[in-house]
Amino acid sequence: QKEVEQNSGPLSVPEGAIASLNCTYSDRGSQSFFWYRQYSGKSPELIMFIYSNGDKEDGRFTAQLNKASQYVSLLIRDSQPSDSATYLCAVNIKAGTALIFGKGTTLSVSS
Amino acid sequence: NAGVTQTPKFQVLKTGQSMTLQCAQDMNHNSMYWYRQDPGMGLRLIYYSASEGTTDKGEVPNGYNVSRLNKREFSLRLESAAPSQTSVYFCASAGTYSNQPQHFGDGTRLSIL
Image (cartoon, rainbow over all chains, first blue to last red; front, side, top):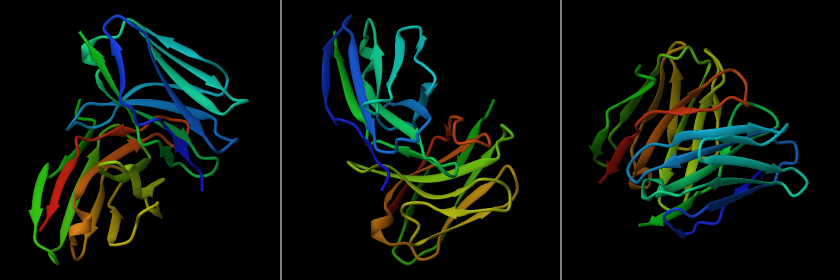
């Protein structure tokens, strides 16, 4: 059974701090990694995605991959109260087109 | 730019009733997906369609059927609704390959009494 694991949280950080969210995956052949943000009562919204060839930075967000340890992280710099949400990690499976989602980490940014 | 459109947004059913959830996308995507989301369970894949004319079971297909009507539309049917199917249902679409991101609709909140 291919799995994606996330700490459910809540992860609490003060405004302006760096929030670090992590995700581990079981399928060593996984090649694409996605981070979604979901506000309460809303649908998942894509933040960023990376492939197995490297990390990516987009504004305040950085996604990093550690293939040897099979985990991917999302760093949010200068955290804002508006970043308070649940963050879902998703990983592609080796065959087919379906992604596997983790259960999400709840982030709370206090002002 | 509509993206992925789901109808209805809310629905209340009685046990045993049938219902079809509709999903349409205007991004010319080949792949479409149906998920359910329950508290503490995350997103669970019900069915997906990698391309027009094909459908495959996901993690939790029991009690559901799907139809890929054309490239744009992918419907989910509950033939005989059960309280255990009370959930939020999301439709998503993506390009052809699994390394392309999925884009989600706003969801259907379904309650079965």
